[in-house]
Amino acid sequence: MELLTGAAAGGHVAAGASGRREEARHCAWCGRRLPDSGRIGRPRRYCAQPCRQRAYERRAAVQRGGLPEDAVVLSAAELADLQDRLFQLRCAAEDVATAADDGADAPELGRLARELAATARGLERLR
Image (cartoon, rainbow, N blue to C red; front, side, top):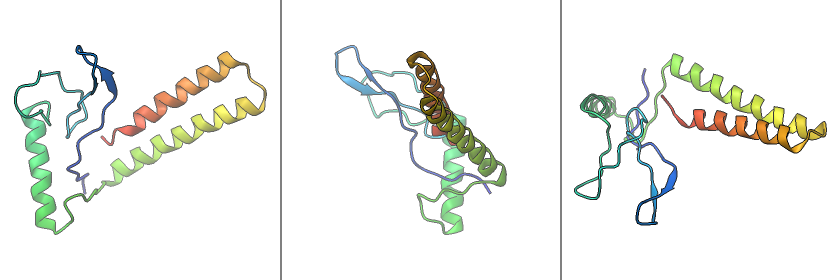
């Protein structure tokens, strides 16, 4: 089985040239950041044609399988990878809690918090 989803990847918010806050866009298939393409036309959803094709194939497979359009199906390898990354996130959070309980200084807690945030960012991607 494979991951089936039609949802676009989320992004970080950054200030644009006009001072407005804009959300960074990511490929709906692979999650890579999409280049800023200006304001003409419909916003891109995919970084390249192969990603567009894989997404189409997954949508077609979902329709043939009778699954709901927003269904997420993970292979055993994808599930194991997701579980590993969740475990890493829990360990990083426990490190912060332990350090705080042990009276760690602010720089150490800051370093651990940054590691926790980096681990959480890595967990945001499904692929």
